[in-house]
Length: 142
Image (cartoon, rainbow, N blue to C red; front, side):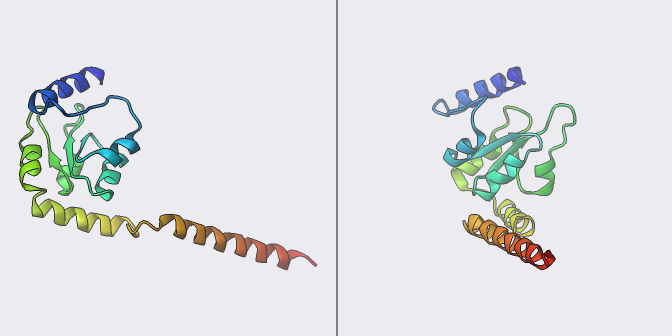
């Protein structure tokens, strides 16, 4: 894996010398500061990047060459390594409308809401659970 990363890093640096790439780092911090996400294979981080509005580019894993997110229409391919045409086009012209439409549809279908209020909803659900348990405990007492 390290060798593949080093090859990809060299290609990025050749095209975009000021790009910052990390092999090991907190991925959530990277999503927060990134403009684009390039993913190797299938990972929930790719979907989280989409949820945070980051355009997604993927490279299939070497063992299957199956580009799962590209097949779904929610990512653009960066395959074979060194083919940055989709990335460069997106930097210049934005995400293609057909990809944006698929991403919007995907996020609406697979996420309840992306409104920044997930903590409030989680607290509400926990409150309901505690109230229900409390009611059951009281009703079981003589």
